[in-house]
Length: 422
Image: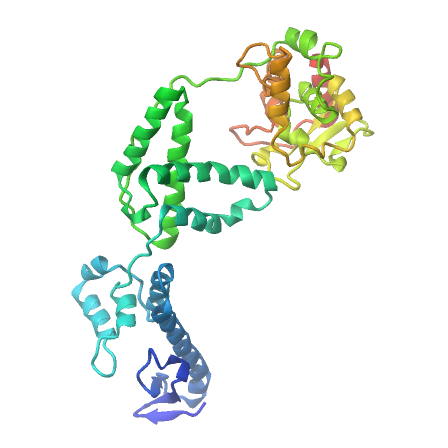
């Protein structure tokens, strides 16, 4: 680039590209390189010019931006000018010298206030207005990384509770600007939920989930968009009373009812095999349904299954594990050596099984369900005195302390489980 010496330092003089004429009134600009060395100036010139172009681009985005993009463009331009973007009230509270420095910066060469510069440097850009429904769509974009590794059905189940919470709130209060939602609005939502709970024998847990999903969605988006919120959620949760726990099946019930000849014949083969595999593994139904052929090792010295995060997410990282197959569970897996394609990414398994068990009087009490087999296996391990770490490893639970060593091998696990197998 051609250098020009102005006093003791070197500068470059460049024509302003036509595309920036809307935001740059000058035809030419002088850019000081702040050095008297021609070698250093030649190195700095392209960098300084590139920074000027980037600043113009940021300013042009600010001039052209609408709605949600305007604040982002102002923040970008402020950074290009060497300032941290602050909203107008915060700018007004700056020390006088910093405030004057910002004010001087927004006056152009004609002595006029540059509106785009003022929005960026003095905090004049308005925070984006985002409605509750729009916030949900923005939430999916922000939290897209959370879907990595999830199956289609897992993504559906991840989205549905938030969709429900948003719909319930919007149906009651309208599609409000999230910046205008107050604590009072949330308590109106709470009152609406309490009326439903009182009239329809619903649980407080459903309401509390709505409060959590609604508030976390809005807060995530507000944080990403630098939007100040007006609501608090302290005291919002409705007391759920004593938490209901799912009881385990008794050993007698499993032996004499669930494993009675023909008891499960009315289930399709895959569902029946999953139920029987749960008996001596305690694995979650979804974990068994997610097994692929190469996770099933029936010919190994110790037949076993591998619970892997493949094509789906597991509940947590402790859930990846190997479980030996013994008793009725080994027989069941031999009937389904290729896995369970019908239920691999299908949410109907639990409903199908529970409906069948209920219809055929195979539930020990109304509080029992398919999942009670998992709890029954845990109780049998506990009664047999199996070490806590091994129980937690088999169940895919955290240990609540540091894990040392690799844990028990399959042969030892099989020795422990065989005496309690059904």
